[in-house]
Every structure is written in C-alpha cells, then in structure tokens.
Amino acid sequence: MNHDVRDLKLAAAGRLRIEWADRTMPVLRQIRERFASEQPLKGVRIAACLHVTTETGNLMRTLVAGGAEAALCASNPLSTQDEVAAALVAEYGVPTFAIKGEDNDTYYRHINAALDTKPNLTMDDGADLVTTIFSQRQDLSSGIVGGTEETTTGVIRLKSMAAHNVLKYPIVAVNDAQTKHMFDNRYGTGQSTVDGIIRATNLLMAGTRFVVIGYGWCGRGIAMRARGLGARVIVVEIDAVKGIEAVMDGYDVMPMADAAGIGDVFVTVTGNKNVIRKEHFASMKDGAIVCNSGHFNVELDIPGLTALSTAEREVRPFVREFRLGNGRVVFLLAEGRLINLSAAEGHPAAVMDMSFANQALSAEFLVRNAGSLERKVYPVPAAIDQEIARLKLASMGIAIDTLTPEQEEYLRSWQEGT
Ligand SMILES: NC(=O)c1ccc[n+]([C@@H]2O[C@H](COP(=O)([O-])OP(=O)(O)OC[C@H]3O[C@@H](n4cnc5c(N)ncnc54)[C@H](O)[C@@H]3O)[C@@H](O)[C@H]2O)c1
Image (cartoon, rainbow, N blue to C red):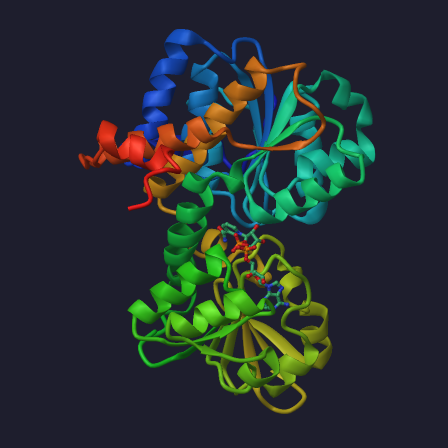
C-alpha cells in the first residue's frame, strides 16, 4: 500500500492513542457500527486532507467501515501526530501521507499523492484539495460527486469559488453545522489553544494580559478559557456587533495598535491576513508571546517580524525568540501555525465526536444524492445536526423535554396571542 509516514514502528503507540480517543467519541462509534452493517460508502474512493490526529484516525475507521477506500494527507505541515499516521497505515490499512514538520514541497506532494487515488469524494480542512484540483488537476473533477469542508476559512474560500462560478462539484459546509462550530470552534479551540500555549511555554496564565484577536466562535472560546485561568483578557475586533458582545461579556476591547503595547500574550483567530503587523511587533513589551490559532499563519506578518529582528534562535520546542532592533525580544510560537495542533494535541476527542459525525453523515448524504446536487456550497441538512445533538446528549445520559401537543399547537398558531 502506498504511504509516506515518519516511522511505521510507531504504529502500536498510535493504535493505543486512537483507541483512547474512541472512548470519548460515542456518536461517531454508533455511526461506524451502522456504516459497518449498511455499507453506505461501498466502493467510494475518498481523499481526505485533515489534521492527522487520533480523532481523524477514528473518522477514517468509520469511512472504511462504511465501505469506502479512504486515503489521508495532512491539512497542515505541523499538525500531524506521527504515531497516528503510522497506525493508520500499519493497523488500519489507510494509505496515509503525512509527516509532522514536513516542508512545503512535501506537503503538496502528499496532497497530490492522496489525489492520485482518483477520489469520488473529497474531505477538506482548509480547501487545499479543492484548490489543488482547481489549479492543477481539473481532470479529476468529473469523477467527484462532492466534497466536505471542515473549517471556517475553507468555507469562506469555497463560497467565494461558488459565487464566481468556478466550483467544480457540490460541497457540504460541515463547519457551518451548529453541532460543529458552536462546540468544536468554541470549546475545542478554546481549551486546546490555551493548552498549546501552556505546553509550549509553561506560562502562568493568572494575571497575564492576554489579547485575543477575533471574537468569532474560536475567539469567544479562547477568551473564556483564558479568563477561567485568571488571565486579564483584551479583545480586538473589526465587527461592531462582536465588539459590543465582547464588552458585555466583560472584556476590555480596543484596537490592535493599543493592545500591542499592553499584552503579554497575543493569539490571532480571525481567518484574515496580516492582523499583527510590523508596527505592532515593534511596540510590543519585552518578552511578549505571539501565536496564531486561525487556519493559516498569514494572520501574523512573520516576514515583517523577521525584518525587524537582528537575531533569531529556538529557545524551546515551538518557541522562537526574535531579538528586535529596539533591544526587546518577541517569542513566536510554532512558526505561527495553529498553536493547538502544533504544540498540543488539537481538540479533545469528545468535541471532535460531533464534528466528525457531521463529516461521516455528510459523506453519506453526498453519496446518496450524487448527481442531483448543484455546484454549490450546501449546509449540513438540519436533520443531521439535530440527530447528532440528540445522540450526543443520549451518550451523556442527559434527557431533554419534548413539547406537549398543546404547546406545539400554541407555537404553530398565529391566533393564540395570550
Ligand atoms: N485552531 C483550530 O483548531 C481551529 C478550529 C476551528 C477554526 N479555526 C480557524 O480559526 C479561524 C477563525 O474561525 P471562527 O470560526 O472563529 O471564525 P469567525 O468568522 O466566527 O470569527 C472570526 C472573527 O475575526 C474577526 N476579524 C476578522 N478580521 C479581523 C481583524 N483584522 N482584526 C480583528 N478581528 C478580525 C471577524 O470579525 C470575526 O468576528 C478560521 O481561520 C478557522 O478556519 C481554527
């Protein structure tokens, strides 16, 4: 079987970790059991470009159980867990192309290796498969019935492709499911970003001035968890509604130019580019820590930081010190790549359970509806969202109420005014 991973001897350790994650992924497990008996993906070739983590390992197992032939490559050069990649190849028979720390050329070689399997379905986290197909391998698109997209940045790109009429096949925006972004982006990114910063630096959060740039789903979660550990949180936004929300959530809100000189730690999660620029780095305090948890590291102007610096060195794993011309130092974590996936393990499995349940059920939806969908970005069907929430609650042993017939009638009627 074709593959490219760091070391197949890591497979046994990877299997243990994948099984550990599976313990807290009960929704995906139930889907896997159903897939195994119903085979909804029988004979479907799937190319997945996702963070190669334990949770992704369990998604791959689910797709394979459903009858698919799945191949996997990484959606970020630094997020791969090498033992998981090894286990997928040696223990689960999934062709995997991913090595933590791979260079840019290898990263794209791996994307192309996954595409060489001539997929009928693509699964993206950041739209790299779709954009590679569009820019270099258009011949593949006629064989593809659809694709899924995991993250905000990818959905934005794909919607832009659809608006410009260049999208070649239908996409389901998994990120936009309520059971995905309200939990994964908020609680998953919130906890794991703080985890990544702490693992990289061993920083005491209590009392630090912690600047969150972007108060969307991810930013809300990061701000909430940083505050929980005693950090004094500052929010930077460009959207007035998000700005007022952050104020009423109790945070200081100010422009980046003002926050730059105050913060001890900076985290970008905007999905935008050059959010922290040269002039901001130049006004930071000595020892400021800068990282990114948005999809691409272009959120930070790293060339600008390099240009300001007279010397650079690695002081700990994932911590690079930049000595600026003004005599101060700034620490950049994990090359500005997703800090939670680079320096920690990414989101906990319990939250990826819902995200990847959406992936598996969206794949089934695309196969079932092959040929009848347009070249558009579709939401995850509401019934799937509701079903995942119901299964998750049930797995936690939590029940909710149901409407009485009288209440149903009351909510349906326009005549009942009192
Ligand atoms: N680290 C992870 O594991 C992880 C998980 C999910 C999503 N993401 C990524 O994180 C990023 C954010 O995702 P989200 O779901 O929170 O998106 P979102 O759209 O909910 O929030 C982004 C916020 O950033 C703000 N913003 C944009 N430009 C800005 C600027 N220049 N300055 C300040 N604020 C600005 C927007 O107004 C918005 O409120 C995306 O790139 C997404 O793909 C990462």
